[in-house]
Image 1 (cartoon, one colour):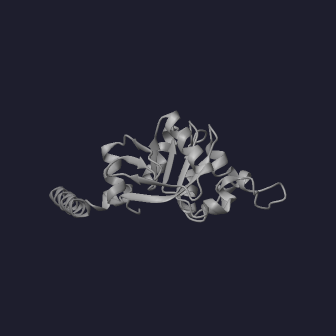
Image 2 (cartoon, rainbow, N blue to C red):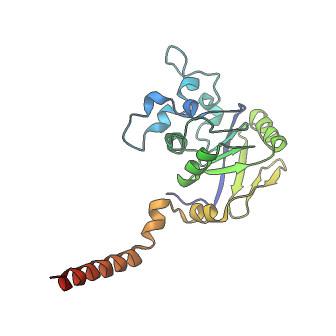
Image 3 (cartoon, rainbow, N blue to C red):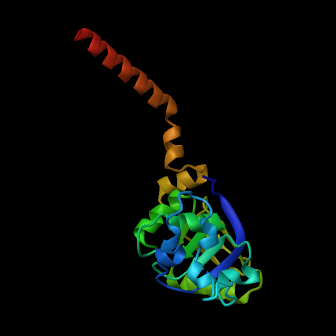
Length: 206
């Protein structure tokens, strides 16, 4: 998992509340067995017209938001089913940060385990960022995980809370597997001791 420290990026405004996981990654794409390639299908039903062409009215298709790594959205982002594919799709598309007033609990856990920093700000703060992202050309935010702040060049500054353990994992670039591998030596020693004890017990029973 890619470590996260500080990110400065163009920012996409998605001024919608209750964005559910079926909109983030529609169910027809869940049959894929890989964890990559989902970015092509992120917000698929909103990004495409009925004819299958890119919808110029949808924010992610606007040229000014190309290569953005920060997404701003309304409250209750990531609600709906618990599919981890939603986090995979956001990450694969290139998003490192999502800012919203609130997030669905399971999505909140899934996203941060996949290297996406979720930032909770107040509704007023999010409304200001959405306005700035829509009206200021090449609008960029700087998100510092170490300082737990969100700032811009127009004078905006806000602080956010983050769980200390999740902060550590993001800064170190550790997912669940990475955390486990940090204890490889101890695990190997335990297995060796366990195998030896089992062999001695079996031998004594002969």
